[in-house]
Length: 554
Image (tube, rainbow, N blue to C red; front, top):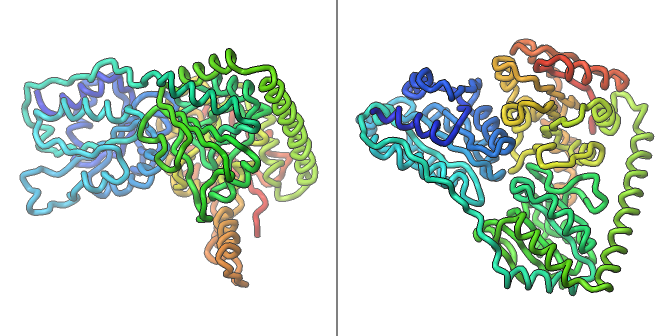
């Protein structure tokens, strides 16, 4: 058999369904083999970044391995930005790229480069198949490493001549791997002891809570100990129901801001994440002075990686949180229970007060034209069908979105990690393929949308019923906010406004852009038109673009 057959058989052996890609000449062996593998569907994209972004979100939505097919050095280069996002999101991907014939490597042929070195900084493992006999083992190892906690992308270069070499070594699986260990009972006991001596605990939940389906146990724990639950500023998934009284939203992007948000807390329990993705340097650490810090993770790599701990525990998150709940149920005394109940009652009152404040803010902004963010999101919320999945890259609207739309489960919401923009439209492709029976609405800023606008063609080509909502404020609004912060932090006042941060002259026309790629669309400029436009798009059963012109920062 040929190396290419072993490669394709490896995909089938691991129950791969989709290959996301943008092929070229060095990928002819893969493309030519698809007819022999009807179980594999090629999802064609018009840019390599779209392929990686879609595969990353697909792996998150489906829990399966995302497979990506890129084209030689330039194609891999085009995909690196999204590959960085997949690494930060811990998406289990296998990214491949065709490599030129190894017999020409000393002559530096067209499109060739050291692909392994290019991919290494943004992957867990990067390798090239040098002989057909290596294909089976490299692919087996690639699948294993991609899913080892913490999960993430790996890269495999496939030279065109190696794919055509003969081998007798057939494709193989690593087997059924049970990777997540049970937590050490001594560690669980220490965490319980620390919690029981706390008078004001707080929890910070990462994306792994959602991925491991541990949210229900986290809810039980937060209620049992009377703790607010925070997420990081950027999140890929919903680890804790956003409308729960104990949900506090996202933390700031600097250590001092995080410490301020946690002010008065005497114990911080971090669960299932790298903690923290900061933007601004502020010195110190993100915990209030004197607070004890605990961490529960599924991999030893993350425990105490960034911060000193009072104690850390490694174990399967659902089981470990369940063990904590069981121990606390047995050991918590009446005084601790009363205090926890009081804290829970305070959070219910605070949540109700916040909801009242949000309604008043919405009322004040209701009649503004162009429409305000709160009004736009309320109009969208009002027509979302049950079970809708939101893919979010609304950037400066994300905080409002999290307050106004309730996300109950891990699969209700998909964001982007790492801070690179363009993940939303591309990611919606993967989410729809991973959750085909659920309505999918992608909400993106206009600046972000232009990084992956080609995703619309893929949605049309594969007939994916996704509603793309572009919030057009015709500016890089987040950069304007960040410029304000920069000027304040570095004492650099300026009267130059916001240079090069407006998207006008010419104004982007997303309806025409969508039409050129086979997607119908309409532009909404009035607030009272929004809900009708969204509802119509949802019932069309086809990909649809809704451009909503909104107020800007100015």
